[in-house]
Image (cartoon, rainbow, N blue to C red):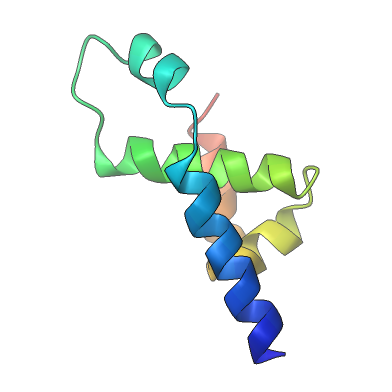
Length: 76
């Protein structure tokens, strides 16, 4: 179980390192991205990797589904 958890975290780190921030930077060019902006972008990428599965995404990010929902609510 711990090995799977470590592999998932490693995959997250790698996906974040390779994340395409070009569109993100372009659409937020009027202001400096905040921690919330970066966190939201990470959550959206992980959600995409999990094919929209919110429970799996929340578990993988070690956040509650409520926290995930709040970030997703603010992306609209």
